[in-house]
Structures are given as C-alpha cells and as structure tokens.
Image (tube, rainbow, N blue to C red):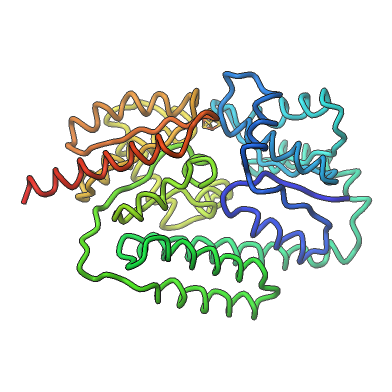
Amino acid sequence: MRVTFPRLGTMHIFCKAIAETAGIPYLVPPKTSRKTLALGVKSSNECICLPFKVILGNFIEALQMGADTIVMVGSGPPCRLGLYDLVHKVILEDLGLHYRWLTIPPRLTWDALMKNYQETKPLRKELTLKNYLTFPYALYIGWRKMLATERLEKLAMVARPREATKGSTQRNLQRTLHMLDEAKGGKEISEAIRDGEKIIQDTEQDPGRRPLKVAIVGELYTVMDSDINRGVEQRLGELGVAVTRTSWFSTHIGRSLGLGGEQKRERLRFYQASLEYLGYDVGGECNVSVGETIIRAKEGYDGVVHLMPFSCMPETTAAAILKQVSKDHHIPVLTLILDEQDVEGRIQTLLEAFVDMLLWRREKEV
Ligand code: SF4
C-alpha cells in the first residue's frame, strides 16, 4: 500500500505527518505545476471547475510515481465537490491507472461511516496492529502540525507588508515550514514552532509603513492554495497590504466535525450578514464570501479580494452580489477569476492597480 492525497496549500505537511507517524507508506504528490494542470485539463471536461482539474492532475502524477491508494475528502450538495470522487474514479479507470479509493466523509453520519467501512475493507487487511495503535497519536501529530503551519502563515501575513527587504518574509516562511515538515514527534514540533515563530518575527521591518487592510474571500481551494492563486496573498503583502483570510484547514475540518468555537461563531456571523442579500445557503463559500465582505466593510477594511475558479457555481453567484455589496457598503472588491490559462503577469497587474486605487482612496479620505 502507498497512500496519496490531493496537494492543496500546506495540507501535504500534516497528511505526511499522519502517514509517517502511523507507519503507513505514503507518496506526497509533486508540487502543483504546469505539468499537473496539463494532465488534469487533458482528461477533464473543459467546463468543470479548476480544483477538479488540479486534483485530477495530482492523482495522475502520484499514481504514475507508484502510489496505489487515494484518500480524498468528500462533500455534500449543491457544490460539485461532492461529485469529484465519482467522476475522478471513472477518468482514472479510463486512463488505465490502478488505484484503491477512500473518501473521507464530510459529516460523520451512519451512512457515511458504513460506506467508509466498506471502502476500507481491502485496505484494513494490509494494516498492521502497530498502524492501528499509533493512528490516534498520528492524528494528534497531524493536527498539531496543521495548527502550526497556520500560525506561521498568519505571522508571515503580518510581517510581509512591513518587511525591509522584499521577499524576505516569504523566504523565512518557506524555511520555517520546511523545519516543521521535518520535525518528528511532539518535542521536535514544539522546537520547530518556537524557532519558526522567532525567525518570522525577526524578519527586518520598516516600522514607518502604514499597511492597507484587505481580506481575501472566496472558494476555499483558490484561497488556500498559492500555486492555484499564483501567490495572491504573498503578492498583496509585498505590495504593502496586511492580508487576512478566514479560510483555513482547521476552519473547514472543525466545521465538518461540528467543532471550532470562535471560528464557528465567526462563520455564523458571516452567514447571518449574507442574509441581507441571500435568502438561503447557496453552497460552497458563497454566503461566507458575501457576509465576510459586509463585515469587513463595517470593520473599516480598505478592500476585499474575491477569488474564484472559472465556472465555480457558488462563487459566480457571490461575484454578482458582491458588485452590489461593494456599492451599498462602500468597500472596493476585486474579483479574480482563476483558470488554467492564467499568467502571473495579469494577476500582478490587477493587484497593483487595485492597491494603487486603495491608496488613492485612503489619501482622498484623509
Ligand atoms: S466551490 Fe466551486 S470550484 Fe469548488 S467544487 Fe464547488 S463549484 Fe467547484
């Protein structure tokens, strides 16, 4: 058995930690690249959303490199994510690739657990007693690494707009994420977190800067994966913007498990705010994109960047409503539609123009 999973943002760090700690052989798909996209695009319907194509490309690459078991997350209607696994399986079979499949259910219902039980029957035969016994600890290690990566990324979001040397925060972030990825066991993880925080906080700063405040909202895959959004978060930070986002792995996992405390309350707040324009839950992150924009306007943010994959159903709805929200709540919104054709230059130009407009607006208000 050799397990693989989609490559999404920093997810590979904690997926790898779980497999490694539990002693389950694994293969991390290569970093999403032009080749990954080309493989996914070639075998997909052109109208399907970008994450479908990227994840398919991840799986094709991983299977060609020797993985044989795919672990995928599930979702419910109305979003297409709930159908990804069914269609991916058909395409991979048509391509002549051999795999076993395990979908992690989005909700722990009785039906989902039974389906999961059936799917894992052949896999369970290959697991040893040690794999079973260490699995709870492996989940704990994975969870710690996930929270740590998010903590380091948030610190980098604060440091970037004031960095004295452009790119220094990103270099430090990559270094600290690598340290965390390599850490084994609780003690090493604690050391990696402590050292990583210090490295990012020690990035040389220019205290005279007054960063703009921008929130990134939108479809979770395009918000959380810097390869797909072409580094929007980093680009904005390096243009002098303090960026916030509320889409994190811990948010979505907590939501699925009915946990989350503060994050759960925040999402509820966004959802309730969205009811000014939407009468029901549209699906995906649509309501949150709309509601968060309204809340950020009230909190005095300078602008919102809305990310969505081409043909994403919930975010297409959100994009239309955000035009009105922008007018009603006096907050500039830049919607970036991402597809496989995107080139970095176009995104950089749009972000620079948006930031220039926000600066001009701030100066006018003073
Ligand atoms: S949210 Fe949008 S991009 Fe994501 S799976 Fe649903 S339709 Fe596709």
